[in-house]
Image (cartoon, rainbow, N blue to C red):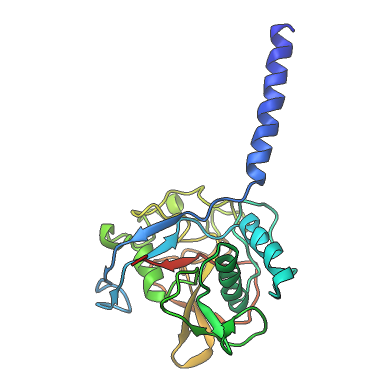
Length: 258
């Protein structure tokens, strides 16, 4: 085999390996976050956040599908939920109810104790607000305080306006640089804790409801189809919990092991 043929063969092998890697689910790597107090620039200033774990990335299409495919035969109503064109892009078109149920499904799939329950059983179907087992070791949505504390970099925070920088383009996909589309996770710089895309790409559901509007839940972080206005780490958004949109996704959290 001459050098040219060897080079072409090697190129084809590399291309195949790269395509296979892209098809693999991106690991939901968890980052330990030390507790502390939210700063005075927060609307929840001086609120104390206990230590917890949070996903390094937003949940991807591939990760969502692996869990949902496992969960549907187990009684979860997650069939035909979520959507996106690329495995490594954040899952979107997810309601708050579906995000919560998916967290439970991921917990059960990995042999962990589900966090969310309804009528004494793990929450798997329907559109009811479940109760929370605060002692469970499974996956859950972050509380709003946890989300903001992590987005600000926790105890390592440098006081940036956005998650990881004062330069929005360095850390976020937003309407002015995204082309109006969601991008693969981890393609912008991380924040001080190594967390990616906490500003921009997709809105992320949190657990909390709006105090004056019970049917609305807090969303955080901004989105690829929005301007810079909703992107600062301090900004709090609200949306009806059954809303489904191109820009709604999630990031998982867990309690810190005792």
